[in-house]
Image: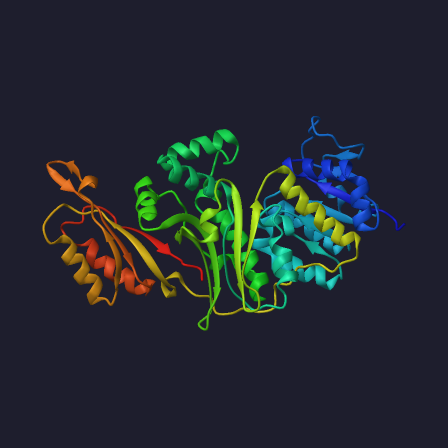
Length: 429
């Protein structure tokens, strides 16, 4: 049997605990599948955690002791963040140590540089665990779909936002209420900004798009919109129209360039993504040879993410080349105003005669066709002796810049008393 693959783990959080557990409890199975033992020879973290079983591995509070250590073949970076993690990974790659990381923020910010350094030194930089936890979406794009030209991909790639929208949809509760529950259950951080504002999903989307479209990682080009403005009535109206609202990351390759966007989206209720609820992740990829393929599973958590880390270690033990492929091209990136979509509009209006006619005329004058309308008397509310009834409109596809111009006119109508809500609609066919 070959010599063991000697592993140094940086970080001692939830995922590191899962990695240590899997490597120990599945030792014989992993040795069989890797063709050699996977041996943890060092663990380092800025803080000791006596409650975490290191299974006999030596421990240090200085993560830099792993870099250049001639007893460590592969460094597993699980400390998170960008700056310190980047120093650690650059040091390891420069010392000709393989690297496995679950750090999507690091790959989104510094991925091109790190991939090029790994290539230069002919070693592996693997990051399957950085996107969708235990769902093997990166290897699927880089390997299984390598024969395809990917036209587009769309997915639920943040479990926290999906949990919140699912609970709001099924229980009719407000965003703030469900967020508090998500925090109590450990699905959301004390500061949930990265999740609910779409930043986490944007990190992941930039990585997926780079692999799918053979381009540089362009986190800076991702249009990002969160879920904090979604109201229970939007979810109710969407359902009445035959849709579910999901927080999607969407990347599409067009003749004009590449679009990358993260935002709430109306998805037809019979679409596969509409059925992914709770904290689950799902990615739909459309390739020219395969057509649509779906990848679904747990997108976070101790063991699912640790599973992806260990799978990357097995690949290195087998001598497989890194799946990392971004860094080849810089295509034209489209602005959100350039995209074409259908739209859901909730127009907060006073209950006055002719309001809808005015709105319809403005939309028509801007070349925007209406697919469906809802205006219900039972939704009326009386405030300061004025009755308010929202106008719900579903449009046909239109360029966002055209819709922007039309909505500026509608917003100025005296009967429109508050900001118009808009949510993009995707049929993903």
